[in-house]
Length: 156
Image (tube, rainbow, N blue to C red; front, side, top):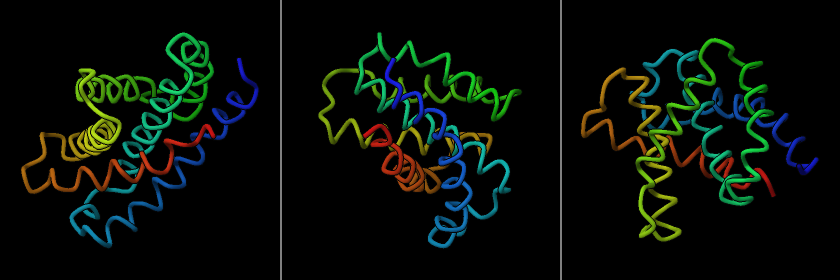
């Protein structure tokens, strides 16, 4: 395993949490309907989405076999953050995103858009506790893109 990657894994969740908390106000200024969600729920689901964005980028960068060697360290960090729901939410987000990325026909930009949209949809679905309406879905890209843009290159 790469020591630099291990160090980045240990710093990842605190960095994501800072952005998740700040994004509630930032995105809420542009999309007031997001402010109706309590900060704790917002922070939790945005943190999981940021974690998924970062770990998806790591898996694509190092390959599946090497990525699997980092999973126990990531699991430990997630459990330290939220022992009750963290791992379950990360697995759920990962499964949701994987369904959106099925197929090799997606180009690089199409793949990024699908990843961004699926991250945002996962967050909104969990915050609304139902499938978002057509109008609400329009927020998905903004929500997902924030985390994707912020953490896709975390490993550089």
